[in-house]
Length: 161
Image 1: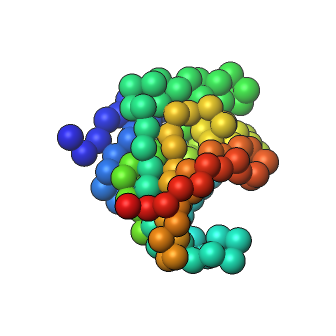
Image 2 (image 1 turned 60 degrees about the vertical axis):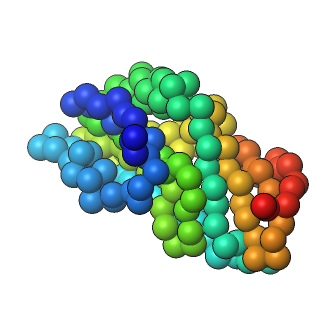
Image 3 (image 1 turned 135 degrees about the vertical axis):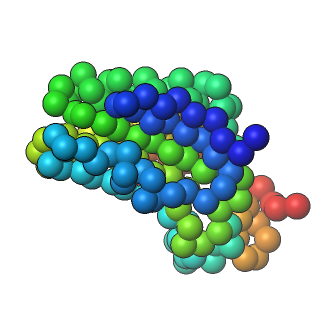
């Protein structure tokens, strides 16, 4: 199975192995009462701290990850009561450079709520949701990394097989 998701009129949480569809996320967020739409796409960069990255590999405890993603969107709706729609879509498996691994989006009548909720979703996703990232470098080494809202990363070093 390529994807697992929770989808309602107001929230969309999805885990999938195939490339992410930015246009589908944007279409979900837009509506007649959403004057502000904020959509963040996190992509694989080629260079990380002077090292060439050849790919990222993502794993998740999928049932818990989906539940946590839904919880984050519920929390965002409590913090920004006029939030109309929110989405968190994450790719699993191998993600090469320039391709998106995560989409977080929020839509509200005005931009402040959309921006705030979108930032909240990506920051908390990286802190709270059981999705693990392995960065594989051109020299054959690899590191498991865990995210944090501040952008700092704790890591565990290993070699790729």
